[in-house]
Amino acid sequence: MPDRFANVQTSLSGPASSGFAITPNDAADLPETTRAIYVGSGGDLCLRMLSGETLTFSGISPASLLPVRATRILATGTTAGNLVGLV
Image (cartoon, rainbow, N blue to C red; front, side, top):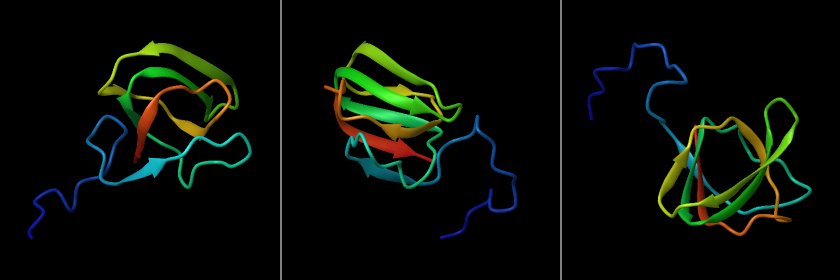
């Protein structure tokens, strides 16, 4: 399939080109740093940012897209589900 944008530099404000399912884990980093996280089932999301700080987003609505650069999604404190990391 042709991609008319194949020769365009990717930016953080552009659309994601890949993604992966996220299983929250207190001890393991994500396979890649995200550019955004899709939250399919609402709840709380506890994550480690690229900067190293840990944040909890409370009361996220289902089908939300959070534009965050995260390196880990923590199981402790996370009640949101059906998470997808976008890169």
